[in-house]
Length: 176
Image (cartoon, rainbow, N blue to C red; front, side, top):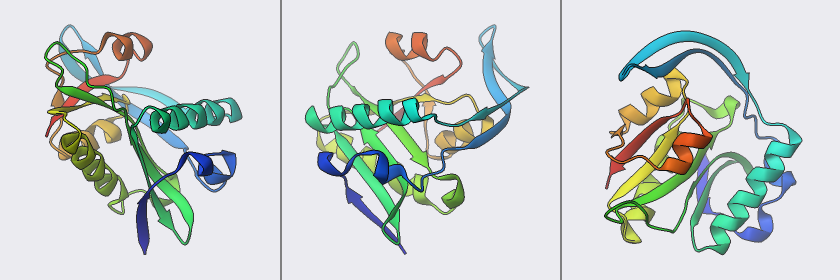
């Protein structure tokens, strides 16, 4: 049975991710071309290096240190998914909170973990004053299909930092 709980800063280290499999074989991507979303083959493998894990650990710790939300899904005590939301509200009308990460281990996908983590993030953001979650969604068709199935739409307002740092991501929002 999957158990969910808020993570604490002191437990966020490399050993937490020991059995986490980030691996994703991507073939089809959605890319914006001339204002239209186009499905195209652009195969690549997405995985994290040791440096990527260290950046992730630093980011998740920072999220907690700035009063954000980090929540995990565990199977037999092993991390199988996590989500994070930044506490800072942003946007022209201060409506957004950033869903900064949502990942499910490859061996645990398609079991409702992502859905449960997303709902927990949305609930937390709403209770902390946001009207919308902001998502910079990976270009993989499967990733964007997940967010659309959750009710996400193209963002009414783009976060410049996200759009510039991940130009192939789809900038989306979820109304709380």
